[in-house]
Image 1 (tube, rainbow, N blue to C red):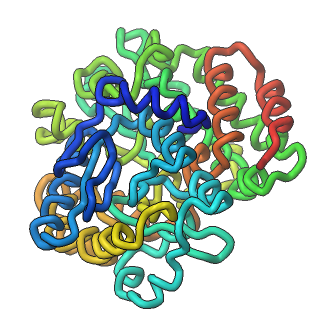
Image 2: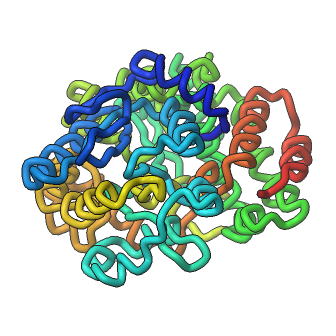
Length: 440
């Protein structure tokens, strides 16, 4: 999910084309894509409904309440943002508030002195931390110091399925890997893709490996990788997980042409809610977009969800959460003191305000607020309770790999994942390639 570094000249060239190439939507009177006027702080956010509308509403409400300290928002598509923000930060053109996934990307900012340490600010505003999920803070913490504010929703990776298609073939959702593999020919014989997958985006493929590594060998497998231990990718559980993944590819477990499908267009979700694919492994955030775009699919109760199936030979803890524990906002060290003051006030009073929380809940999401399950009601409540329990009862959390690792190794990881899913390299070659990548 990241992260090439470009020269200042490349940034300026990209900035000129940004409104088209990155689908940037400027708001709040910016003077150019992402550039704040005097007296404003800037923030870059991601597009995609319903999240985009909620983010804009949060900024608009903050600006209405703070006429003397405005926040200028600009929106970018997901994959374009990952390149654009890295380039902007490196070229001293960062927005005041930097939307981030935390983890390795945040560590890279910290190592380069590009974001402020917020530990003391949290100590001065303890209520900001106290109301958020405890599991949201490790990905914002580097060497014991907090460098970002957790916000928005928790997004574990979920196994979604189309109930109508399961009824059509007379099957039950899989509870084990063996059952999952047995379902592949059942759906293929019925002319239905077993799994939807936006393989062009690569990080969507990665979700499978995150679960397979963890459920095969437990958290120690990726912990060793993240720590840069020699030959960590060659752990027997890692090889077993890589092999299971290719077994699924060879069995035609994914929709034909999956490598040309991009997640940004939500085409993978459409395959599920249009009845062309039976299952999809994806982030909890897709519930809201399927509710928004899928007609009566979600309201009618045809969307189902289950935990990732157990591996019969695995030793990992099935309660471990996998995915994004929250979204995060960091404070650019390049911003002026006036801009920083505006952004910090937004972090304190704009993020997860009562109206903000209500908006996320209404969208079908689970904001990272302790006790927010008391607000769940209506048809979205069962899914929200599933996500809330996953987040609050998780013994530990596997942060999305491409965000847990530093940008360089993360890009190499995504490249090798693409090759793994195209069957152009073996599990052993994948491990060898990744073992050779410097961890820093």
